[in-house]
Image (tube, protein in one colour):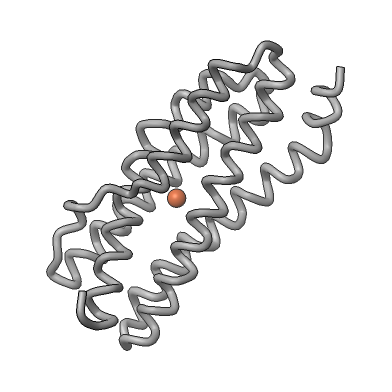
Length: 161
Ligand SMILES: [Fe+2]
């Protein structure tokens, strides 16, 4: 990579890999969540994630680059960590509270990635692309807030005993 344009393209591919891995991993979170609101939250975020993946495909098309070719190792690690947590949880309420913790790590990672991508897009004069990326960024913030509310409102309390 030798300039901001190439760095931006690299970031987009990294995000594309992250979203692609999440599309595969989220059904496992859905399956293991026993609280219905949490299950719904994961299900709707799965749908959102599929859209975010398509949005990145559109963006890459506009930029004449392929979205594939990078593996996001950070997302791979976050997913591995979530999977080992799922194996270790011995109580359904602990499972719900822990799934939220794992999912929020993922959301925060994505928030940071999209935040950077929006800035780079603006910097490079791609205002339409910046708005698309901002749309995804807002969805990630909303998903994170929803999880905050589920944890604070009820699910952490239930995991105490
Ligand atoms: Fe996402």
